[in-house]
Amino acid sequence: MDVEVDDDGLTVGRTAEAVGISVRTLHHWDAIGLVTPAERTWSDYRVYSASDIARIQQVLMYRELGLSLSEVRTLLDDPGADVVERLDVQRALLSERIDRLQRMVAAVDTMKEAHMSENRLTAQQQAEILGDDWDPAWEDEAQQNWGETPEWAQSEQVKNRMSAEDWKRVKEETDGFEADLAAAMTAGVRPGTEEANALAERHRASIGQWFTVTHQKQVCIARMYVQDPRFQEHYDKRADGLAAWLTAIVDENARAQGIDPDTATWE
Image (cartoon, rainbow, N blue to C red):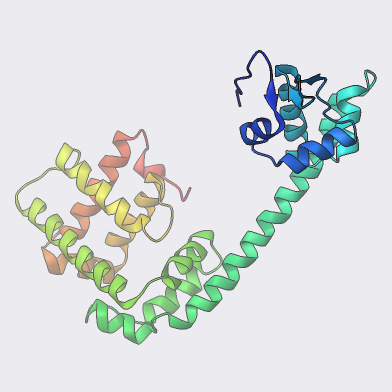
């Protein structure tokens, strides 16, 4: 922070305002010899020079790192003080503090999710919103297959924050997107074209609201649309052949990203 200093220096009050600390703090630092202004006005008031301000800013920086006032004075005044060594020690302490704070944040998030999950919709309520095509048993099956994965944990965090209105929005957006897919296929949009790739990206984004989806993961997901009869039936009810067409546009979009869909893995 640059502080403009008059040729005659700054008074205690103006200095405190300029560097963002109290007059009382400056008086204390003066009393212990940490920052002692050498100049005085004709009426014997202390004034801080540019070098005094620079020293104050150094003190503030070291204090922000967690050093005590005595440690700061040693670093500033002792020619033999090993500044690098002292900062290395302080860096290690700060890293430990950051780790501890991150663990605390994770604990708070867990408590928050547990609290919010009290308002989470039941499987039956979700089914009522999502319609006749949704089978609550699918969630049990998904948990059995994916329950130990990071993606499942991520999606559960999202669901725990969702209200009934959020589920209705998801249903409306999904219906609208699937209608757009059927319309594009019926209109003859070919996989690999710009329009088809844009639809493939919309598909990836729709899944990405639940967990992070790379192009390779998207290819793996799309394979199920032609391998699992339930998925195929769902999409083909929109338009005959839609499941295979959706899989094809996902594959070609991945290919445009430099990914071979035939060898894509879950990563």
